Length: 582
Image (tube, rainbow, N blue to C red; front, side, top):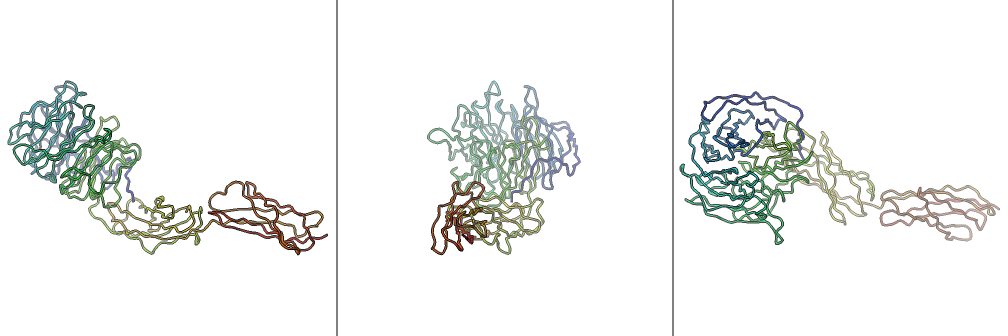
């Protein structure tokens, strides 16, 4: 089954927005817009911002922090929107300048917000500013991460925003309220990733730019006083092609893997230790979808893969984190004014328990944003094929439709949308994927196929499951495929004269694949003098033919018309007997 959620047009429930005033120090009242539930498992809130820079999720206090850079003018002050887990805005934190990065401390007690000249720490219980640590000036936007007990951030400067893509960016940190500078820097922007699964490791990815066409990924050990660089990797081939186009990165809950959203490749799954390719990769994103985000759930069960895609092509896939698990992804295609149209790079985070995914979408212009709160089903149920498979008709023929019938049972609640079973046909030509079949409400289904060769064809049916149902064990049925039948019908006179001759008309028909042009039929004449072969007769495009003959004797004369058959069509014959008089 492919569970797809398309454009949201109908509001099924409205949530009452909350307002909260907690004083004038950095916090203003929230005049929240209404949020709506697009489905039972998804809540969507339109955000009152025209720019976006960072997202952080505070599971202890059930809050979502969304940074609005807001740096159209030098004196603009960015904000941090605060939402609860139900999609209601409860507060707005106002920075002293543009806000371009967010990170939570390991214990969740402190929210760090990156600003142009400082890192501001907020108490996550009171949402009050706790401390503002001066930092070296940044005009390009900071990335923030918390690792090894330290708050890490990037620093880049350029005269114009357009130069930030290839300006030098450095890695700095705050430890015990003191700003420190490392010697690590790259050309162009860098993305930082840490989190519970990373332990005392900080992952850094370089963003591709005109001066760095083969960007690097690397990791740092942050347990000591200064960062120690670990393994690094680049991805371009010997010709310089294939360089990483980094949009996002995430560490798995167990710390063993690093997932990378690569706009040129899709979702890369790497071993976190040495950044080598994982043994089993994720399946490719749908055709036309360009990777933009990635996030592992805190419980280790799921991975969310975000993309930018047009029309009904999915922009978001939620699936098991284990790539070897064949369960079909839950897919979301955003294409409406109530949804946005694509997942924002670096715009996805999970709650610690994996019960909610928080995903940001934007419109085509990139100046409107939506917060989606998605709750995957908490439980999975079994599924199974029952009663075996049958085929119709009783004798399959090459080039003729065949129906493979079966029944699928699903435990638990009935799915909201019809599920589908997938099928493949294996014959002497190899394996071919067939069109999926929809399962009816009573569990029955029919897979349709037109076999292309004579012999045995084995049909293997699968139900890959979904986030509610586990995959079913595959079932198979072998069908013997015969040549397509052919038939000849003759229309002959009952009597004819030896002197005037006779004419027999007929029609040749064949099922299955189309016949080649120029078909001829063999004609034999049997009388009291014996049996002889007459001139073959050509079959017209409409299947008709005519036989003209001068009988050689009187009495009963039998004409036999035959088709020898070919690789895919069976032979056929027909007879007509005429009484010949003087």
